[in-house]
Amino acid sequence: MKRRKLPLWRWDPFLAALVLVLSLVAALFQRLDIPVVSPIALTVLLVAAVAAAVLLVLPVFVRSLRRDGEGSLALTDEVRLVPLPVTETFPVVDGQRHRASVEATLARTGEHITAVLVPGSTAWLGRDLRVAVDALAGGKLYRVGYLPKEIDQQTDAALHPLALRGVYRTVPLTVRSEKSAVTGKLRFVLEVRLGPTLGELPAEA
Image 1 (spheres, rainbow, N blue to C red):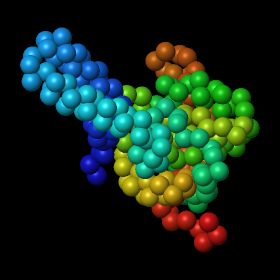
Image 2 (tube, rainbow, N blue to C red):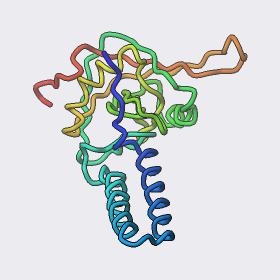
Image 3 (cartoon, rainbow, N blue to C red):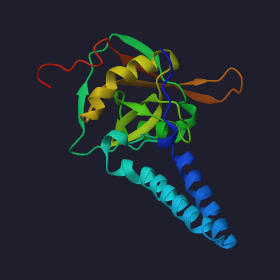
């Protein structure tokens, strides 16, 4: 399955850069003060800059346009967590980059950890749409990694329609420490258990 990417018009760095470039070009035309041309160019450039700025902030108000970056999912009354019947174990990738979140999770939970699968997520400044793994600890969510690329696109396709309704699946998460054969330092190894009924909610849900 082809990897989905966030469209450029929804990618924050692109929109921010576009606003900046359009503003600089508009300022240039203002300084040149070319009769007829400058007023028209200024109007067009400023309208485009405002449109880009609106697209940058629109996801704050429109759920379907929200980009889940570094753990932006919040547990509100609109979010419903539904456990997933699980059958298989998969690794969680990029856990070392989220070491602080893993440590915070371990400090606030016991042996059994629940994770929330968040589709349509992007790593910081990234465009690839992935399925994030957010650990639930102490009533808060901590981004601890992502599902591996081999399964994240199929999983994202199953979970995305539910997420649009504010429904997210929860799965068991295990965290263990092991010594790296290369550096000799302790590192975290994270795994989640998944099942085949990702997009199917139980009757009582």
